[in-house]
Length: 269
Image (cartoon, rainbow, N blue to C red; front, side, top):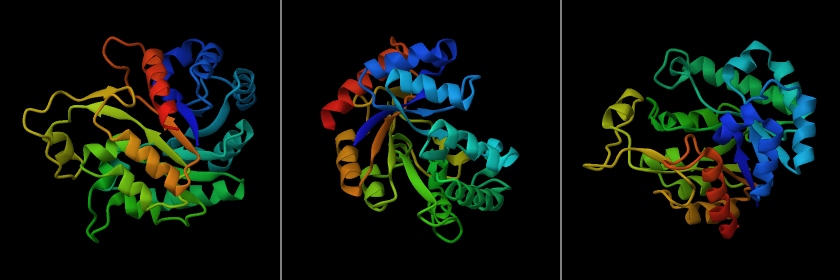
């Protein structure tokens, strides 16, 4: 199992100096990266810069809007970069399970998954917290999303922090996805979000009384049971664990946080 970094974690650095940031990420011990945009570069340029840095390009986060605008062309661009996977990373409010367009969302994801298969890629779905809301049929929205395309076309990219925040056991969730979880997002945090946040996305999760303010943390320094997740990932055949930290910890730069995460996770691999 290899270690990757979602470049959204260091997006300001990548925007300022993409090539230099890739070299620095490689120097931290990461084996590959997951893209979150191309920073104004062509697919060929991105592929070349990653190769020069000694990094594999594992996958890319690509929004539904980009796929909807030009499905075949978008998939072809990421295939040209060398991605094995592309992932739907987020749903806008209207596309979520409690939004007006959820049926269209599942239909579109099925189309994207089929086009990815046609071009030799595999589509992933990367969760946040709102996908754990229950639908009228009793399933979670995440289960409904996983069911909208065959397993060979649509696989999982479980974000273990968001799952933990709504009271799920991410290691147990992974064990339900044997052979369907090639990538796992390692993310950590402390504190909890207010009850109103969960109510707005259709969940009944309640934070602990007097919970400290929510903050993202380097992997291994928060509330997520990362060793249990890594053990489960090994059991189910995960190929890559990918660090993502939406915002750096207080007193750290984004690169500092990425380095601390790498040092911790490499000890578990």
